[in-house]
Length: 270
Ligand SMILES: [Zn+2]
Image (cartoon, rainbow, N blue to C red; front, side, top):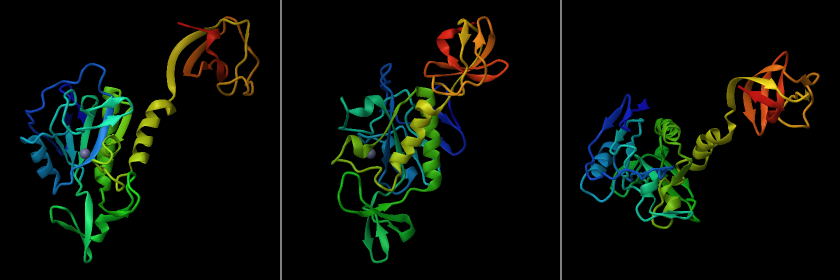
């Protein structure tokens, strides 16, 4: 699965649909956010058809319960998923965000031993979870998401974050509180975005592969990036050639006879 140059997902179980009502491109620099939704619908296909139709709503994609994908709008084009919304100093989030809909019935009502959606379909106990919404104070029943669906959503978000340099993942419930409650407590939103965004932000080492030369008379080489770490060898002397392999917080990890960290200001990198 990948995103091609037309801003479309290509891969197995991906269906491209026509949604001619959405034409406006994102303004340069605007797109930096993903908004997660549930469809409150009967199936991914029925929701995708509905959203691609003449209604005043749409989304970039719908992800089904087996991980199948329906893409309605290319990722360089604004879709109509957020509606009246705000986050920090922004209003009307459509022009900043990609909208991902997950096939899910939403709130369920217990009827006998079954759980009924607003459109009448009944689900068994293993598809209902009793939980309290982040914007509410008492619990109710919610349709569960499937593992395949959450996993596919994660893969898609990973690709989007990488390709479009996105830095924020939000639930519709967080940008339209009171009006919207999707994706709701059955979706592990906090964990989901922590995993995706922390990795991207700071945990990944900044790897370098360059030749360098020591410019200080004597340069301490340490176990890690900081003056409090143990020296791993005698100081390097001016003119010593090193291989720079990583950078972190003003320090270079270098390789010479030994491997260790040195202040990056004392290395001339070619
Ligand atoms: Zn929504």
